[in-house]
Length: 137
Image (cartoon, rainbow, N blue to C red; front, top):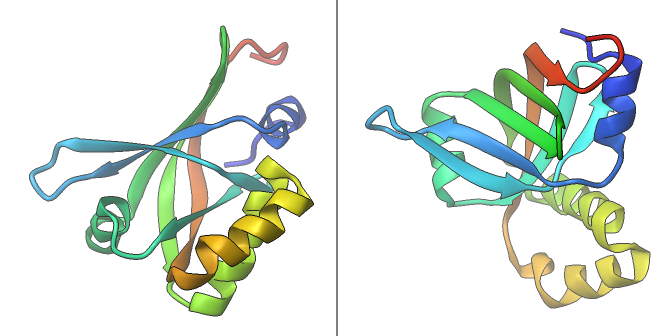
């Protein structure tokens, strides 16, 4: 499912997303996340290995991701693939931190905090998009 140009422009601005995964008992688990659009049908995220969300994703890769700004939002459903490679996880985290915090802060946080963590990359393939507040809707 391709995002429209206006939706993609909205997502390229730095906002927080809410990622929902499925707990073992079937209940939803939500996490506020940094994200990065890759193209019109893929989103990139990153997390520290061992958290509830990646355990949920190992069992069931179905997710939803919602990004809102007042009355405008883009809500996506899809599946996530996990890249467990520690080095690629660090590279993704550096890119995410630079996107959200700027290059100088990213360098400091990578050294002081993230470099000791096993970071993993989450790649979401978008299957469905629901959006509100865009002219084409």
